[in-house]
Length: 254
Image (cartoon, rainbow, N blue to C red; front, side, top):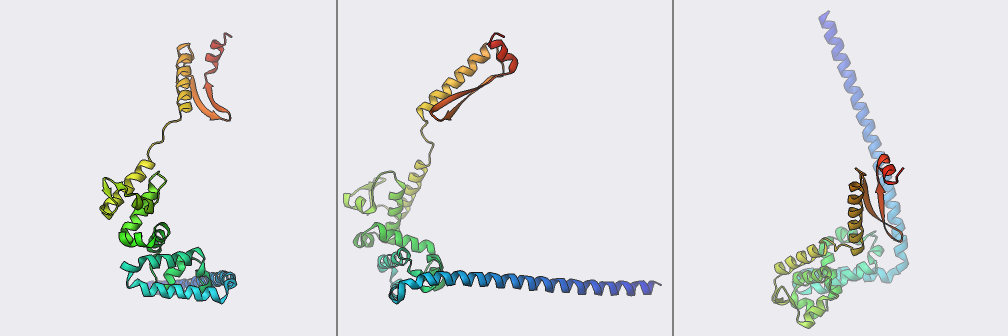
């Protein structure tokens, strides 16, 4: 009897294992169908992007390839030629020439072509947009980019080129003297200051003071639990008063 029971259990185990394998196979098939559908949708989206890009014609495609070739040639001399790379990247991005190459986004083109990371590309583009070539080369890529971040973080209406032309100082040092690390620290200070607590609105301050006075007066006259809150509505601030029903009757002399 025990032998028959063991044999039946083994048979049931084999059946369950076969059932599990069948379900796993069905799951893989469903996942494959879903992935295929996703690939099909992605291909359709890319086809639409390419259809739009084709409007630029062969001239746009040639220009895009020429710019990419320039970048590849200059990458080996990036310490000297970072500015030209930034200008080329800027044109590719601004004119959306990556579309004629079959890429939906600027970042996608950078990754697919193995050019550089998107953050590095944005640095070079920022330098090319903010500084003339001679000034950027004098500072070098890292300091030039740090200077663009500094002028963006400070409230003054200035530019990196203007700071250099005026011989301005940052933390007591000229732009040429200050290090990249010190300049980056100043960027952090400027951002922290800009994000600091805002100065209170004088009208709001008066409204809150009036609310506190009114609340204290009501409670002193017997309206225990009374609250007064200042709220800004259309046309200015209003005081919202809440008092218990019994206290309201006493205040009104009822």
